[in-house]
Amino acid sequence: MSFFSESNLPGIGQKISCTTHSKEKAVIIIHHDGKREFYIMDKEGEPKASIRLSDEEARRLGGFLSGIMYKPKAVENLELALEGFRIDWYKLDETSSVIGKKLGGLGIRKKTQISIIAVLRDDDFMPNPSSDFIFQTGDTCVVIGKPEQFASFLELIR
Image 1 (cartoon, rainbow, N blue to C red):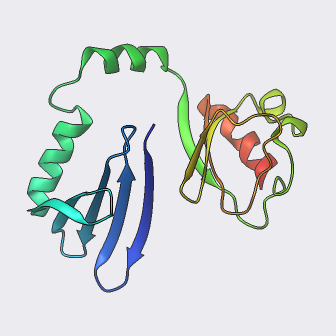
Image 2 (spheres, one colour):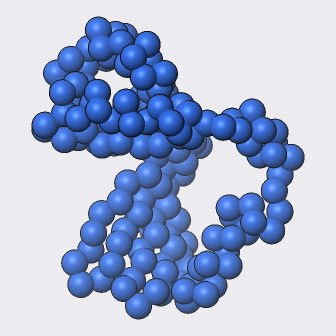
């Protein structure tokens, strides 16, 4: 699994950091003018390689990476398996009704038909949290379900 985080860079744009499933790190800086800087980081967090892309170059490269031009067979099979389902991310703030509560005691799956498949907390990625998992402010829940079920899930967590 990979982990992404975003942060604003005042006066510059947006910074997206990524740690891949193989523990490699990359940083993308998107400038307000559309220019992109892409950095591959070493283990100490220093750039070991970088490229700069114009807005058009970045969008074309993004198209290739996202599978617009070529879709691997494994992705086609996954899309068929997930047809009719949606995966989404929800960050919990201090007003969420689930803060400080155990996942197992909430009955989220039973009440909403939505499953929490992972939680991001700071730099930690926790796939398939156990029933003893306790929610904290700032947790990001990665959830899966049918689109029409998300309203009841949001009502439960807010």
